[in-house]
Image (cartoon, rainbow, N blue to C red; front, side):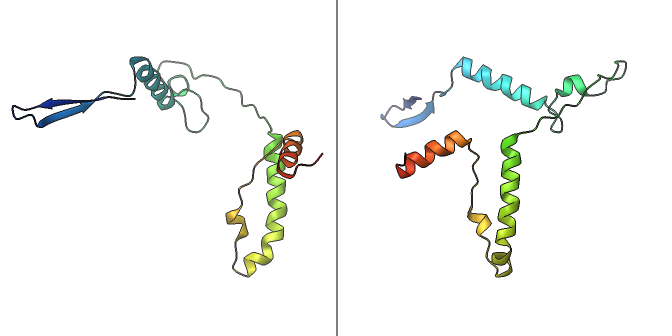
Length: 122
């Protein structure tokens, strides 16, 4: 917890105050390193700009693009597509139940454990 320090004038009134930093030197160094790393990231591909930008006199780096598939995102996409079909009538009536939903992706084991905890089953 940062401490506050006070300076008093000749009448004993507070003339100034200052609060010590809540961050130590190590934490400030970590934050500085993180900010430098983020500033060097390309917002498009995530590679370091210091490596991936064209520089006169230096050969362009060669890259290969890989793809991974998140099975949770695939399931979420299918779920939302099905819900969109089910919500069509509500939308025609001017209602938007989809705005109130917050989808969460669980593994089947997590879903079973959650259901058991919520309903006391099995």
